[in-house]
Length: 153
Image 1 (cartoon, rainbow, N blue to C red):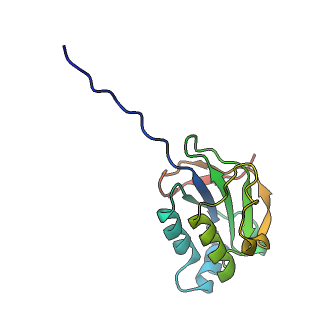
Image 2 (image 1 turned 180 degrees about the vertical axis):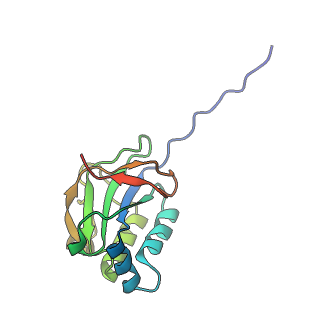
Image 3 (image 1 turned 135 degrees about the vertical axis):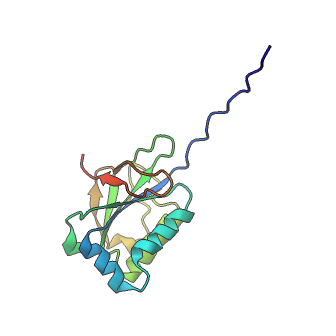
């Protein structure tokens, strides 16, 4: 009689923040002007060391008057779904970027339903509004590289 080893189901992926960063020409230029290391690279480094965090980049989101833009939502590790997203403007500004990096590093939104509830007070002025859930299509589950978020309903 041959014994077949029992297979352990894979552990669910950790939940964490999903950050959609506008990679339009203006937002990228604003990050480069703000400091020598682009905000994009700093955010990428923070996401890579934060449990459950995923970063996706998107073409221009069309909110150019608000400075560099990002959307943040809580991602459920088991399903990959997110709740509503918090839209942030001015993430090219050093204080706003630092607050976003700290928020992502500490786990981002704790609630899928009320993502702005626990946003750091230093980010409150940067909140542009609450948007639709982010649905990353084609994302590499670790880095989100090359993914294109769907920010529509």
